[in-house]
Image 1 (cartoon, rainbow, N blue to C red):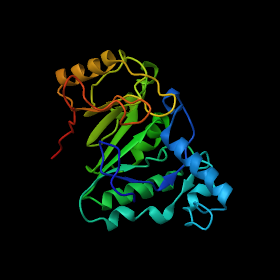
Image 2: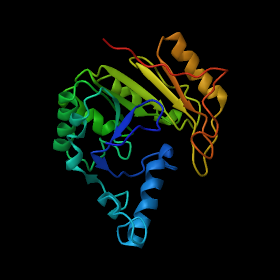
Image 3: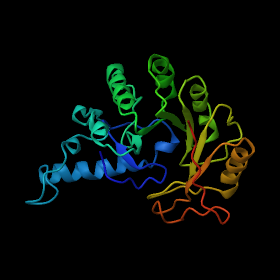
Image 4: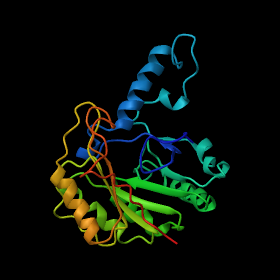
Length: 252
């Protein structure tokens, strides 16, 4: 388990899987891909240590990011954290990647169910895999499921959420790369929106964000504005029309 996360809408991250591959435009400037690749190069250059005579690097950096790694030693980490946390599952991967075995996904869900005092947030760009395995999974009320939607051609990803018996179904419209006129918010419990950050960040338009915010207000869906983005995640700040939007869904 990592310490406090810099991701505004969660407390901590838990990565029982490391690695991923790009599937759509939202992946082009993936922070996880860039970070892991940088550390993989250091690993190769320095023989597995951070610097000459330095500390040993975590073993996952021995492999490139496109190599999916199941870190079974991390599976039970949430069980050892007794204070309730909001935990983002696989910030450095996608749990529903085709190369993550069904049995391993079931193991992750079993741990989340056992750690009932935490809230787990899962985010995927792979609705096809989610559609196939989702009905076979147990969905305890502390497990939230979301999909990433970066442009209007990806709004179909939300369709699978409406079929799942999760307590909270959410959308992460980040990086938002265009307006989403085709997006239906029916059956959606939470919407996160943000601009892209990092090298070559593509700009987000205010009108795209305001359209989503206003639709959420009309349909009484909690709205979370994560960032404007830019060279760094913090560069543009988080103020939208003189407000910080930190709304969360409420469940019993």
